[in-house]
Image (cartoon, rainbow, N blue to C red; front, top):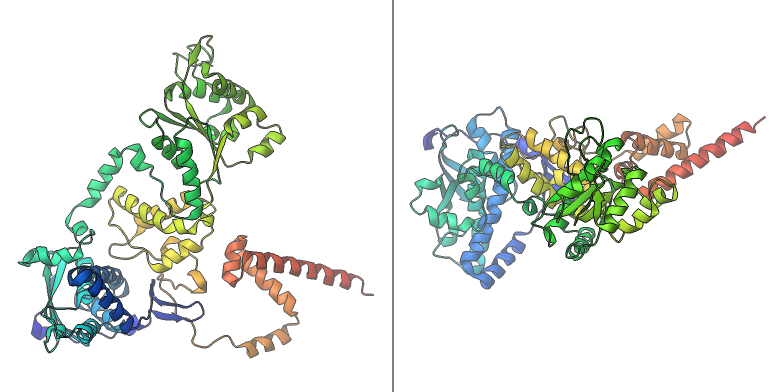
Length: 572
């Protein structure tokens, strides 16, 4: 569209409905993104400190990159909010959001775009730029444009919307004495000073990723990556760091290590990391899932078999111990080993030699054992299901891996790493997670731990729509948003009724139903548990109380119901 043919901006009513002030939990939401209201004076003070501390160039770079990231986020909403609108009406979601967010008044001057060919030419006029006003107030009129965060936003939004690097340049700015701010945007290669403009987005790969065909390259890299790269552990919580510190210390020795923890916490990844950190890193790492091998075959799998040792043994075969010679053998679910195999395993660990099934010759092996279990081996010893001497042999250096619910600080970096890995693996564009999605991830109980998170993220990557962020409802279909915020059928935040809960009306209903307050409370608690499918932690979150409070109130309600029933039975 040329300058003379631009229609008026469409109504922003659809955008206003996405803004939700959740005063009860102190959060503001714009669709799936958490927002904050910040005084421009505070941003101006930050800008002033940066200017005085690191200079104009670095300050410009930081603000431009921050604006670019914000623009990328808002671009994910455009096609989602107005999927059937004309291209122009869809694109101006960004300028309209910019105005709703209080950044600047935007007037489109020229818009000419073709997503199929990548052609783009846009001009916009800005009035009331917070950056220009703030910068001019603190530093006076400058000899250069100063709307750095706003120009970063325009570039980030348009680059994400068009799927290619689009750079905007401020050709007039109030901060340098012009009557208004005026910006022009076009593809990077069409700017004569493209390198200079792009330099303000570095360091980082915001523009570079759009230029390079990283998807196929990443897929290939994952296939040929070294084991120590593919098994790199990710975490920043105190619980994770404590476990990893133990792992690092034990890795330098040859001590047998027992990894304990719930199913799915990543015991094999820890074992591979232990091997990669050890002096045996250049030797084999062999993993065996003891629960996946039939009991009658476990001995031949571990210790090997000679020809004719059993029906079907047509040739001599080395076992896992021999294959791991010089390196590390990882026995997952060691508690599932039958007692006979446990006895032979103990001998190998004590003597450093084995005999193949059906053989008579002893073979020396040098193997570092790492075992893992999600069972209570001490209880298994007491019950006679696990040999005490083997337990003490493998329990020399235990490392407990805490469940994911006990280390919520690890969820976001794990999810981000998984997003990158699965996007590359499946040849998909790297999707963004909304703030609601991250909040939902942090609020989940993770009964399946890291493996559950991995499966959930992979599914989200596969189902992610191009240009759309992944929201909480995409990760957890059928559930509401965290903090009791409802989700509508499209996955957007449903508007909360304007009126608060009518307590007088509720009291009238209570008087007429014939139930006591205790009965109603118990019914409410039970309904929450049913909705959470028996998960008490999830039910407690639905009710806005702690798990301990829920357990106490449930117990009190059951006791009260029994006492009322007993009293009723004693009535004549």
